[in-house]
Image 1 (spheres, rainbow, N blue to C red):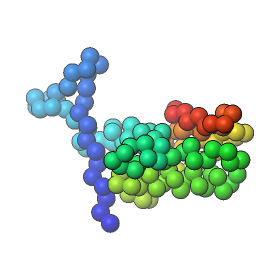
Image 2 (image 1 turned 120 degrees about the horizontal axis):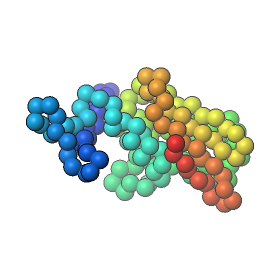
Image 3 (image 1 turned 90 degrees about the horizontal axis):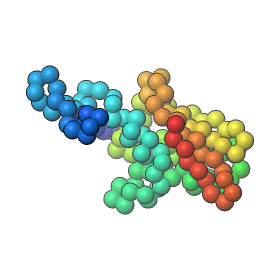
Length: 133
């Protein structure tokens, strides 16, 4: 299976204008991993069918009403791996780990042993709160 192409974004100034590179061309993120953390966070916070054209969300709210257990942590890890490897990152190029504390489960995503995204899912009354760090 071929690896998905690396996404490329334009670089923007703090005033909202497109930046130019040293050669006078439009600056972009090619050759860097600058876009990856933003895309990972978008997929982690999205619902399973949140993007109508593309089912890329992790659907972390599916754990609603389930007590924190090893099975729930494994299910969340599998959901995260599935959403990140769906036409984005190749399986094995990233690692996902979880930490359950009380009513919260924190999800950590690493690429090349570098933490790129942290998400905490907390049970609040009859709903789940997804917090990106």
